[in-house]
Image 1: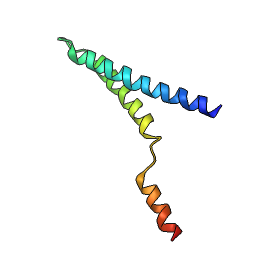
Image 2 (image 1 turned 30 degrees about the horizontal axis):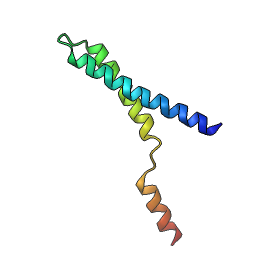
Image 3 (image 1 turned 120 degrees about the vertical axis):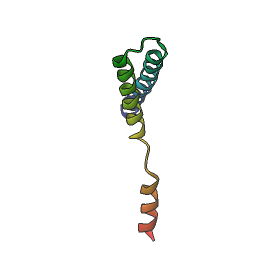
Length: 70
């Protein structure tokens, strides 16, 4: 059950990153740039990057555990 939930969350995150990047590039490539579409693409991209980075452990957490065990 947990494994399935993790894959759905990761899939949603990757979709947010891909769609946000594609929307931002599409809005940037047009001759008449629509600022709202560009901003929504960037926001969607940042939400995806935040969700992805939230699951990456800090390198300082591992060093702190080693110092406490000595």
